Length: 260
Ligand code: NAD
Image 1: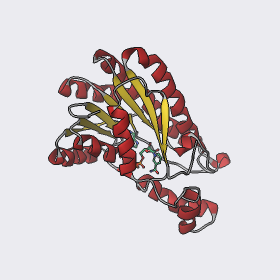
Image 2: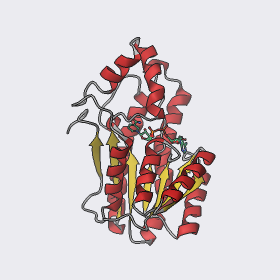
Image 3: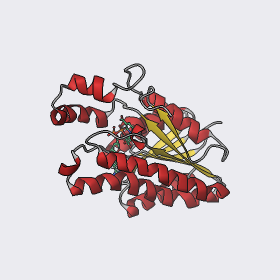
Image 4: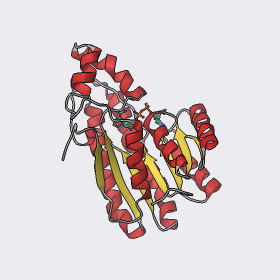
């Protein structure tokens, strides 16, 4: 089980969890395309990781909701390195509102980034994986793929949807060695979560400390955040697993917030 020489595309990898996964993959010797809306940050992250080695990285400007940009980005990776072995569909955002106040435009934006993004990148990568005799597709789900929380209707809907996509890809991909799995992290302290703390405090009428202790970590076994490194470890495991024995599954990494 090694990532040495593997070619990976990680979306939303200019920062946060995606960057942590790209870092882990490069540390294990993989070649990683950091595909992100933020082109400059993707370039900077790629330079940093290439300097770190032993693998290497490139930055790719990509809005995962834009089919042309997704196809061009995947084509650029294939032109440079000759294929794609691993896709991590990770790009995501969070928007919180009560359902009756949820702007329709925000609902559509949420579903587009999480679901259209996962679909378009999957669609673009599968032919290249088939051509090489297989590959690993990893979707960044969430405990919200299994649970619901107030104010997160669009996020919960999108993250549940990824389980369905992963299962369908597993069934269709099996004959070609294309595996598909979902990682479901609990709260990880990234910009996506930092932004929510004051927003939720305001909407719920509680303190920021209560949002962290009660809303975010109240149901964990130890009151701890999941770390970027925890998630990257699981992403490396899924990427390196070489057979169809492990496909169509989801793994929850959440300090026991959700247990099944
Ligand atoms: P983050 O905000 O730190 O990073 C997200 C990255 O995605 C950014 O670099 C951003 O530029 C990029 N991005 C946003 N929209 C994009 C688009 N349309 N096309 C390409 N790139 C785009 O967020 P994070 O916390 O690292 O989250 C990464 C993933 O993990 C998301 O799918 C999120 O839902 C999921 N997740 C996060 C947590 C958490 O607690 N942080 C928990 C469970 C799941």
